[in-house]
Image (tube, rainbow, N blue to C red):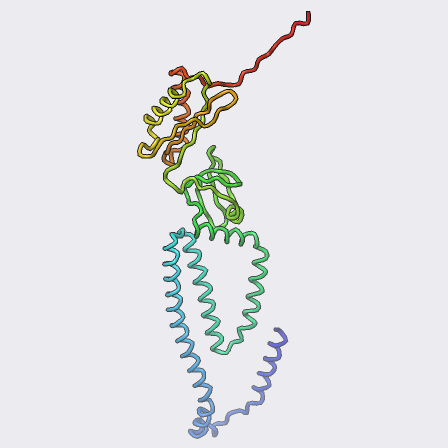
Length: 300
């Protein structure tokens, strides 16, 4: 590029040297008219290009506004996150304005091929150096568009479980049950199985408890039903199932299914589990536990 620039400067200098000096006698109306007529085609061409550039700019600006509105409608229909909407809106605005500038420069006769080549090479180099971060950004866009989970939902994934506190473009932050902060790259969490426990407002609570073979099964079922009827977290408009789940080696395993609000799932589980122990003890229903028998053999 430096050699081309030097050649252009030398050529311009030679042309300047070849220009004959203008004498006062040359400044006649006829000579001036001839000079203007010689320059008129170039002036017309320049004026035409300027008008075309203005039209391209005005039309391009309207097209950019139309594309912004179309993008906003599409993201609003998908209930996209506000952060994702701003990010995609900025990307669209920058790319479309850059394309508009290249069109105007091309109309003015500027060689944009070299500019595009340098710009593309720079983008490739930056993309290769930020490959991991770009993968995280792509994963964040997928999460914010498809909504496999949302902020405030309790999720279970391969990397841990907890309540989603932040969904960013690069990382997703989860607050665990013991109030630790777990940060997961979006490229990883978007490619693993995720169980969203907060998508539905109601969850089913499954509880299995064992009673001894000597205990009354019907009495145990009645106690479990009373626990569900009096628990504040159990939804009374949903069915409650109480049944014999299995016959174990040392216990009859009773099953209990009931529905509770998703936000109160753990509270309901703890409350019902505690009441099962207290009510069974009060009703004389034994909850068996493993026994170890030790026999001592007298050697005498």
